[in-house]
Amino acid sequence: MGFTSIIKLFMPKDRVFYTLFEEVAVILTEMANIFSQAITEADESKRISLLKSLEDLEHKNDDVTHRIYVELGKNFITPFDREDIHSLATSLDDIADYIWGAAKKITNYSIATDDKITASFVVVITKSVAALNKAVRELRNMKDLRAITESCVIINSLENEGDDLLDKAMMELFGSQIDPIELIKRKDLYEILEIVTDKCEDAANVIESIIVKYS
Image 1 (cartoon, rainbow, N blue to C red):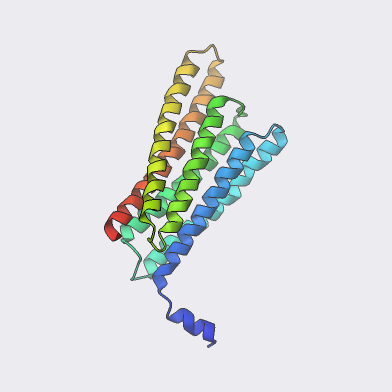
Image 2 (cartoon, rainbow, N blue to C red):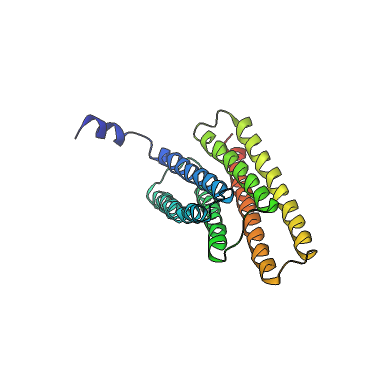
């Protein structure tokens, strides 16, 4: 057995969870950035290609999430409550699922993405995922609890913006003379984009629960 292998035997097994959660955070950040890039892409074929590329990232995220569940079953010692690990993994996975779900809506139903509401939602989602990425990375050492708390506060505030955006979107849609089929398409898209902000808040709430218990 090599020296590196011996060292690994004595390394805390629970540290793997931080690495896996950080992997998920990176994937979510990439998904949010690609989704944002796709929404502003004028060339339709490039936009569709970008949106479809999110499927591979969603599958990659599923794989990492599965590894978290496997490690949860294997490891007796965990860095925080097993229930919190499971809840955080699930809520982060939901974000990836719904971003990909929004991308599928756009591509499957040929929804135009050049409206201000969609653009505003993308800004909110990108900021939320960036704040979540920061919070997840700070979990490893929990040295900067203020940074974690501030990130969670930002995510909660952005979720409120998402709620307001959906209300505004519904009023504009049903107060317009838009084609009924187009109305349904946009309504479905706006609702799924708002759910993404909800899922970011769910993850932030789990993180807040963790730092309250272990700070």
